[in-house]
Length: 305
Image 1 (cartoon, rainbow, N blue to C red):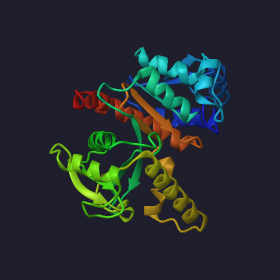
Image 2 (cartoon, rainbow, N blue to C red):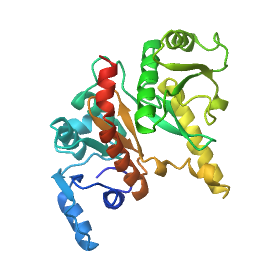
Image 3 (cartoon, rainbow, N blue to C red):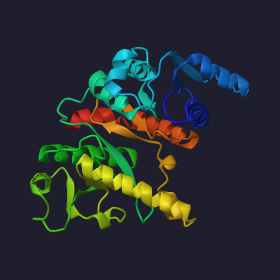
Image 4 (cartoon, rainbow, N blue to C red):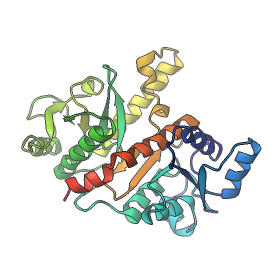
């Protein structure tokens, strides 16, 4: 029920994703069951491979997250988190109200013990054909050095287990490459990363290094990361508007990645873009499948014991 193009894009995306599932895997649709059934019937679609959890309320994109969660107890986001917490589903994905998704992540399933601040990531398409990650990109506008240090751990585990990058190279986003560069936050974080042998720290990286292969995981506070993310989205829009897209720049399209996991919470949670179309929904669902099979959440729990 969430997102600018709901429910059609969500249902159509779920249908596309269902064609890539293995035997025994099912997509659970959470929301108004009558709307979903009517969609399938109108399009002569066999819905036997889907399960349904009915929720007769939903949170609008412009609603205040905390108020809406309290005032609409049977909203699809709250119902989804309850199902995740109870083990009825293995991953919960939504392109709905991102504030409600973050609040639900923190207060329904809760942070993993030892994680100071959960975070979200964005994919960086690399010039060499691979992908990298940047985190945080918006949840934590103000951070302390130990929080950025944990982002390096979370990002490394995500890059290794989802994208198959062995010993991911971790860079700290800064205004210069030299060790002493930056503000008090980056200088202190540099020291923490440099002193830890479990992280493959390659030093400071600059804005020009986002899309080369200097680092696989780029760490920054959520304020900086969100500016970087929005700039990349704007750059893609400008290129597309001028019909200058080639195979590389097409990889900047958010549809290819679907959503971002909330790293550091005690369950598999994915947040999609509010403007998600059916292709983006499909890819978000398939990323959720990868999260399950990689056992990433449990690996994060082990790392933070």
